[in-house]
Image 1 (cartoon, rainbow, N blue to C red):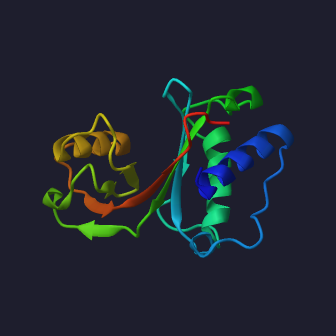
Image 2: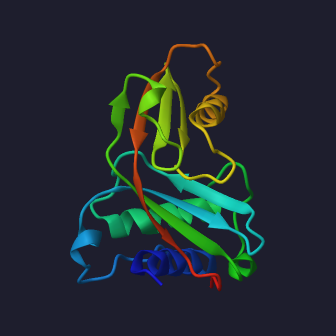
Length: 175
């Protein structure tokens, strides 16, 4: 199991069991010492989404601290779900996406839903869609979904950004 996934598991388990935030480990590997934007997605053993939170820009001094904070937020602060309870960690699968910096694009021809995530902005409304979502198999579908998430109509002018991710998955055993 990748150390980032293990760290997310430990952070969620400690927070649900004690209410305490796991401190970042000492002697982090170099890739975990740098700041980075991150999304943490939680899925039940049956594959259903249970929580997802993330950032588009770095919010913590290190990737390790971002994973800890974002994993906890995914478990207890996704407005689509009630806060997770400790018994729910059994069979939980964790996906971690470390984002590249956002890149503005002038039109949708620069997108590929398998490679690029997309951010759309119009005024204060914003939508984010990670790349390589199974039900999103075309740029048209990617834009439809992200516009709907943001509440931006199909023909409304909006700014587009793309990003790539480095993805880390939990093993099928979960906790």
